[in-house]
Amino acid sequence: MNGVAAILEDVRLRGDEAVREWAVRLDGVEPARAEAAEGLPKEAVLALADSVRRWHEAQRPADVRLEVRPGVELERRWVPLATVGVYVPRGLVSTLVMCAVPALAAGVRRIIVATPPEGSGLVAAAASLLGIEEVWALGGPPAIAALAYGTEAIPRVDKICGPGGRYVNEAKLFVSRDVAIDLPAGPSEVVVLAGSGAEARIADLELAAQAEHGPDSVCRVVAVKGDSAAAVAEVDAIAPEHLVVLGDDAEALAARVTNAGAIFVGPWSSVVAGDYATGGNHVLPTAGWARSVGGIGLETFLKPVTIQRVTAEGLAALRPTVEALAAAEGMPAHAAAVRR
Image (tube, rainbow, N blue to C red; front, side, top):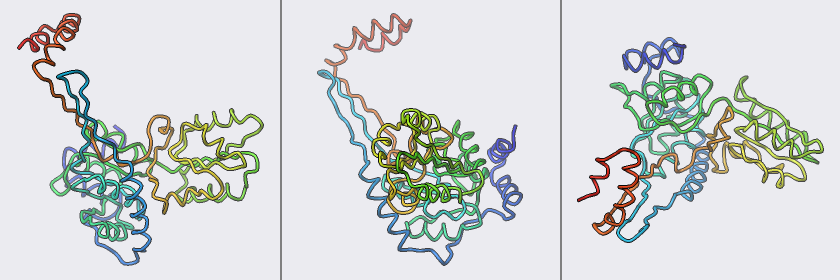
């Protein structure tokens, strides 16, 4: 069992005692409720929260109700999750907004935040501004384990959301056997797809911004050299978290890309604007996961419930189909269940 798995299993078995021991060992302090600190740019946080709220509220999926045949009615209704755990990397108040505001918009009743002790004061201040009071100064795999399995102090949640470094991402993937997670969101990635006329200075700015997240950030340029199809195929193979498309043909190139967490088109569409201000979510898939999943949206905090209503007449009409398929699959009790 590797280091991350050992921590998770220890917390699952021993609860708060294990959380305390690992927190002291990894962060040097015992876990505690974070206290709000001074220095939060409140107006900026509220401006971001407003943009995030408006964009995510517009994503609400519609409930569907359909009579598929006389006497047979199906309904699909979206309901909010009850409890969500939000992991916030060290001091990143913008990430708190990206996770908590859509959860609130979806109708989640309880949000529990975990964030490393360093910088937890600003995160707690931002959470309080959003009406969230449960913020723990606890980071890394011990935090993920506490949210996934629950302890006496920290309740188990229905879903864990939020990005993190390598070890947090590994922990989320490990506990996804036991609790839902949003998506694999590890170290930051950016690819610049540079078409004809792309400005090198703009590309350098975008690369430097994402490199600021740490030494494990992935930052690269894919240049269009005659064959744009090859460049687009290379980008799709990488499936980056962020894709910046530059050049005279930026719109046309962007329209052909299918694998990216978020696409920023043109010289003014900075990834950093998306990180901090546009309202588009910056919690996005990394490590190639953009081939199959997207970033956080309102639906991240909702679940669909299917309701089926069948009348006596409807069941009679369905009976021949049920009996035939039950016989083919060797399920006589299934066939008997519709003979009533």
